[in-house]
Length: 362
Image (cartoon, rainbow, N blue to C red; front, side, top):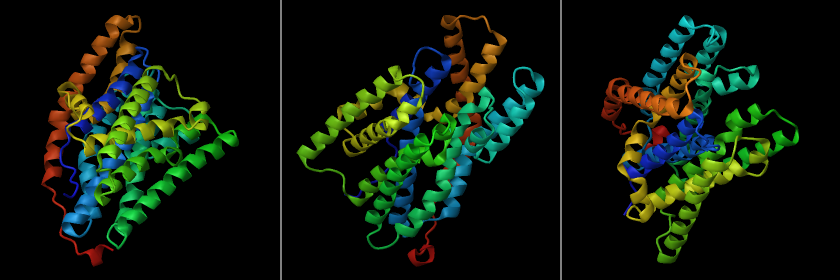
């Protein structure tokens, strides 16, 4: 039976874990490797985007890039605009807490999805918006990867060629990190560069390609091996999020981030190939999936809200501040989801892939 993405609750569970790790890091509650949640987001994003494109190609005989990008705009831009407007108003009211020139520069970069390169070349960045770098990397990737899928996924031997491109991209991104480290590049250049972080996205792409090409394991022994790899990967990811520590050059030199991405890819592969196993049931736990559904808004809103809370109540102890900040962030994210994101999501769902002739798209 051909693979179909559909709505898979365990993938929302992975999103929930990823955003929980990032939020816990910024809340300052001792989750030292919470920044690794971004790696999980990257892998999952690469998987889902590639699956959506390949499914459209299989079902309609073509891929409409116009509709793809319109769906991305409807999904991502409304909540981002709301957050940027909120932060801009805050910087106008409290310039001592948020320097206007830094905020204006960061907002312009975030709006056009190039803020990671702005931070690399300028250096200074307002902590209110420091997390928007990852959104820029994803959007830059979306500009490059879908046209590659269109060029290769509609021709003979399409999956093999597409997989080769993805794996070469993983190797190239890893090599760029090694070269930059060898030449003494600044940590910001290594941590925030699109070229140095795209390997995680491409690992997710490779999993999606394997699913649609029918390359995923089917025999009992290979399924057992994948199950074992995914459980081991889950242990590594959770342990790393809890205890890895702040990012440093050793993480890149030791291929650490690539290894976390590989572990996440194994988890994604396992839950889509074996949807009734133990891990899918754990990841489909309702609180995790509900957190995953609002993960985009929570990722956007939590850091500005945390910074504003700390500025307003600088002497509040963590055992009071963290629960209050978390409740506020969750509440605002729920409002954002239902009243800002959901109307545009409904518009997005009404967009159906166009019936495009293969020869025209190719």
